[in-house]
Length: 61
Image (cartoon, rainbow, N blue to C red; front, side, top):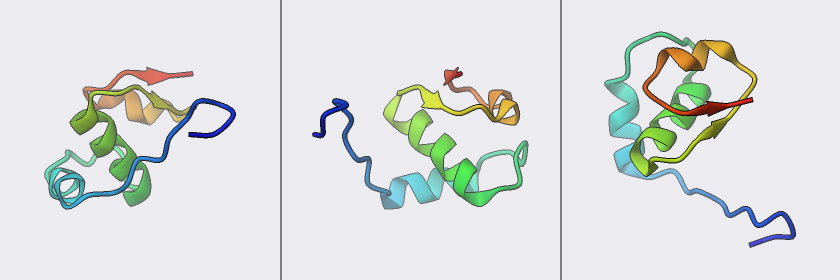
């Protein structure tokens, strides 16, 4: 944990498997990986990218 109370979220095989089944609302594979992590871990995703709101996640910002 750092001074901001944030922790790293490692990329797992399960994240990658979920990623390949996501609809192509967004073309950037890294952003789609972040979506998969948010979905699988049931955590909000902090991003200004409004396209990510097309996924069933809680996008903040």
